[in-house]
Amino acid sequence: MKTISELYKGDKPREKLIAKGVEALKNEELMAVLLGSGVQGKDVRKLAKEIVALLDGGLEGVDLKKLLEVHGLGTAKASQILAAIELAKRYLVRTHRRITDAKDVYEELHAYRDKKQEYFLSITLDGASHIINTRTIFIGTLNQSMVHPREVFADAIADRAAGIIIAHNHPSGALYPSQADIRITERLQEVAKLVGIELLDHVILTKEGYYSFSDEGML
Image (cartoon, rainbow, N blue to C red; front, side, top):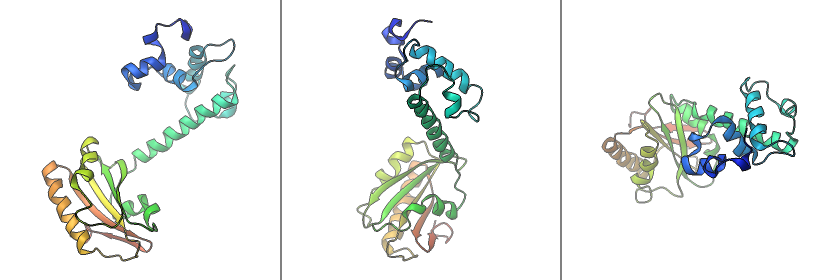
């Protein structure tokens, strides 16, 4: 196996990632990028290949002790690998979460229930109601002139979402929609029909509970 320094520049993992995208890299090349460098007596490509062989046996039994059994892998690099694995797991779990009703929305956005400012949020969903992404669209007092449909739907279009849920919190604790909330919802519903992305719900969040436009027959 050639060392990293012996490879043609375009075949080096980092340069290959930049030129062709991360999807073009093999598993050991991805690991080499993550490691950054090898250790004395072991090139990064060889070290990466040994680690990937360990991971191929299943992630369940991979821990710090197991990684440190790979000759030349120190605590710092082993910790980086474990952190990357855990981060990937958390985002994969999040990605596969489903929204089936307003209660799921309330639980997904629980961190916004007691915010001192109003947050206007969106959740984009695929055709099976799995969450694609959750975003903050606007912070501040809501009115029709401040919430632009293009800001709400631009990311949903980029996500190739089948549906979108909008939500905002009421710092006052008021559980019912204001006239501005109703007008914004009606405007966004019209735009949703035009762009072909279903507006599934508008949920108002408070410390005491939630209000769902869909549940109340307003969507």
